[in-house]
Length: 303
Image (tube, rainbow, N blue to C red; front, top):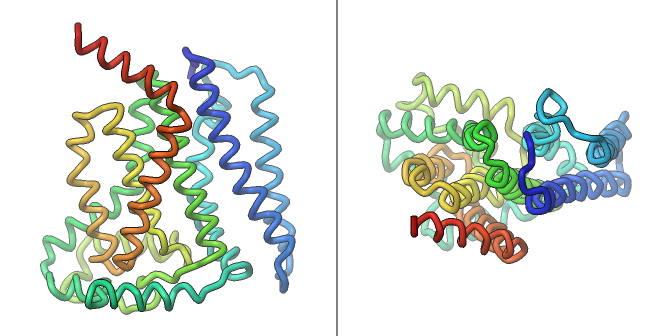
């Protein structure tokens, strides 16, 4: 992937490297300080610091314009997200204060009049709706790879690097919060929706993936919501027609988080809040790039 605007795209890449490195160093340091370490615990901080070293060594290498090294260099922040999310459960079990779970449950019921993580699917017991929402929930896994690949393969370097930075900040801020202040999901604390939904393909697929790839403690704020929202905002900024097509999927993901008993309603609002904070901070910190893009868009309109 050749960078046409080295300064602009270089800043975005450096920011991404910094975000990932800070998260890896912070969690390694916290684990070093944690009491009651299990056997073999040194592997985790060693792996974290090793990845950080590789990130910054790769910056010193003259990058080719294509090949596996370039793909890994450009996408590593996204590739690291699934294993680091799964690692949250291990870290939260040793570092986290789990008392926030009870607080969120209490506030959720007080603010919204019921535990909607239980009541929503009971109120709308329609198999077709369940399958549509579970399909939307599954689509979350494809959102970043699909949009990222669309811009990456088209040579839209700035848009791609913006997306990776926004997603990295949102994900790794969430993960650090999960580690320190874990909240257990209704997925682990409540019975699954069950009949009449179980036995249908997307319900089964999502529950298998969540059972194998989920992490206890990673409920608040909802990363499904925050990452989906920040991706949609990035698409709205750079490709508005596509944002229109993605809006139903985005709303479906938001709704599915509660309907499928994966999150509390407060998790959803917290996810929106985080996404807006990250996106707003990006616009402020990269104001020069934002102004340049607006100027290009105005020029294209005049044509």
